[in-house]
Image (cartoon, rainbow, N blue to C red; front, top):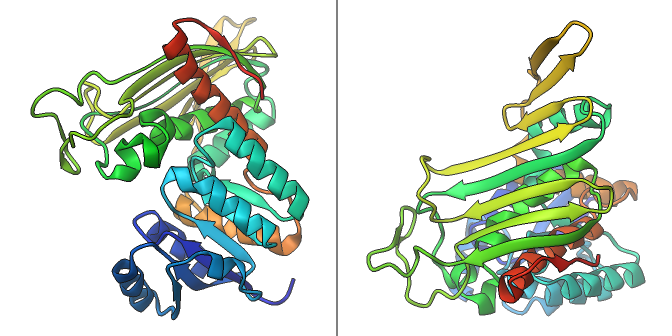
Length: 352
């Protein structure tokens, strides 16, 4: 494809700002339009970006024959209807995580994608970090053997955004699970080779947000209208016999400033840690253990931007989606299983 692809963004708030540099750097796409429910925010964004096609009704982007790609950066509950409408209109779609808050919504998106013949990608930016790509390459080349267990967590101490799109279920679809659990879970599953989950036992609770004086270091007081989980944990089983322990929290009493995101993988041939990119091996004949640290782990571009570059390339080259919706269905099916396990007080089966 020689002609530049044309991109329209829906939702011009915070996360959209991380996508713009990617479209600018792609060499294959141009950002030409934006849509947002807030007219003042939209006009300010358009002025800052030098973009004049600005609409409060996203259907105007879907009906525009010049637009090839729709970039969805709205609150979670609006991802599926917007993506399905865009796909039906013949647009390629990249959508911020989570792809949708429920497994059924993702199945509906996959059906719309298949009918349209267009690409659908989840914006899981941690996959595009240099550390992630370096470690994934080692794993894919057999450095760990068969991965039989993993641990992953994403923990914050008083670290959450308090806007309705994060803390009200009607807009977000869930709390810490949906907001940050998708990141570490997607990355861990990807490193493991995306085995199919079969069951999960988990909890999803709110313990600290309701305490008088509870606050976010990023956004001040926790609002009273807060009806999502702040903490979740799960034990997941896969069809290949592997297991995974997952922990996520916005407000945990944890010795960290900012965010603690880590992943450990354990295989028959070795182990690994991310983001340090350490790989652990044992020589059983010599009775010796070795720790190796990967050194070439630099980001090609800031990961949010890199994912947009990769999507534009995939569309232009008629290549597969860099983050297939089927893999996001695995992620959300597990998180949905954690919610169901909390409600039912038992281990629940997962069907992907």
